[in-house]
Image (cartoon, rainbow, N blue to C red; front, top):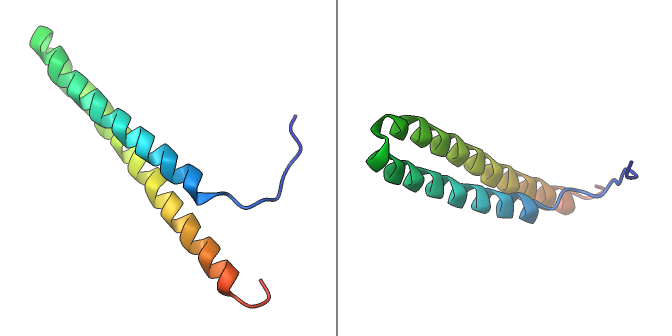
Length: 80
């Protein structure tokens, strides 16, 4: 068990994770196009997986932006 730390979350980590996840989603969508050449019925399920991954990546990017905004706002507030 790791000790609990009370350091604020670094928004950069969320943004990096979001970029990696979005890139993976694009790769999964491309995979769907290639798989459709061999098994046409598999296109839409694979495309759906890519869209889900894209939504997760977008959520991570938004979370990183919100965390950065919150940290900037907190640091500019007197007495925080």
